[in-house]
Image 1 (cartoon, helix red, strand yellow):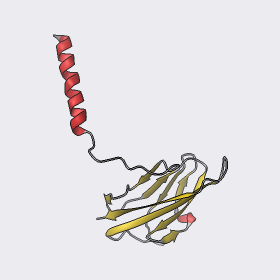
Image 2 (cartoon, helix red, strand yellow; image 1 turned 45 degrees about the vertical axis):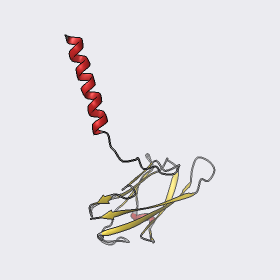
Image 3 (tube, one colour; image 1 turned 135 degrees about the vertical axis):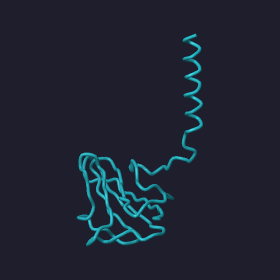
Image 4 (cartoon, helix red, strand yellow; image 1 turned 30 degrees about the vertical axis):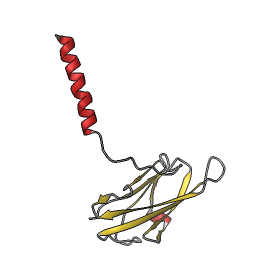
Length: 127
């Protein structure tokens, strides 16, 4: 009786995993990018932070809607290689306007080996 209950529970968990699994495709980004946020095609709120995750030892140039973002406006965590930027008063962009925005990131390895330049561009929408 216990084995039948456990088997039924396992079957229910497996069925729930299949039904509740995300139906969209995962966003693939070119190497060496590890992740980006927001993802291409996402619709986000006005408080959204742009997040770019690269391996440790890379630097970036960031462009929002074709406008270069000065490096001193970009938050960076050296131990993780995560870059973050968000509009703010006095920054390149004060607030996100509603509508579509384009992000372009240009990177290169600055430590730990030979250069590894590249770039990626994507768009998302702000509500």
